[in-house]
Length: 178
Image (tube, rainbow, N blue to C red; front, side, top):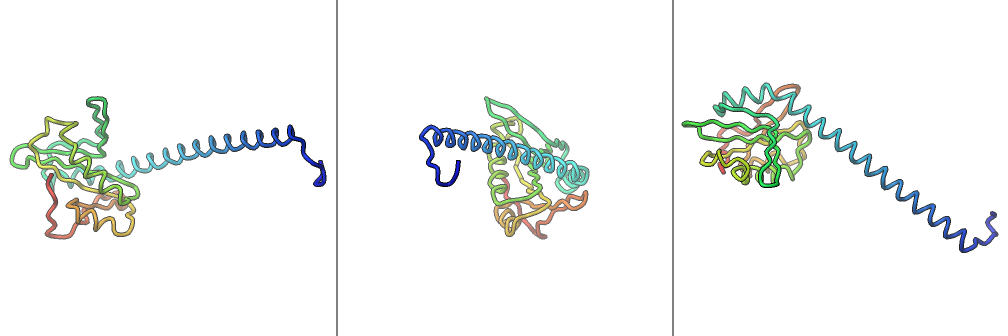
């Protein structure tokens, strides 16, 4: 077929069908690539959690007097599921639950996500009712201004550097208790 040759209607339909098939295949490949990239992000997040867990656990026990520290808690209740990166609590005089959300990259949406976890905690774990709830948002890399916004919302903030988990909230910080 040359540039001066007219296409028949059947040839045009066949070309359109072939392009549509190529488009569907490209869409399928993009979905698969997104799935794989998401999986890598999850693995990096789990790596960040695991990397900092020993120092995080020490900090939760020493600074917040937590008796129980559970990494990666998954709770299913009434057909809903919730996962907590780290869930820690203490009874007695402390009578507090600390929810830690760990991100490899902390974006603004993480603040709302952690607050929602704190607000709905008793829906998933009614046995913890009556305890004050405190949140810690932790990450390796923070988007600009997000750390300050999290603190303004009453959340502790922490950074993961090397294998260390360090609180970054200023001295005198008063967390919000839910």
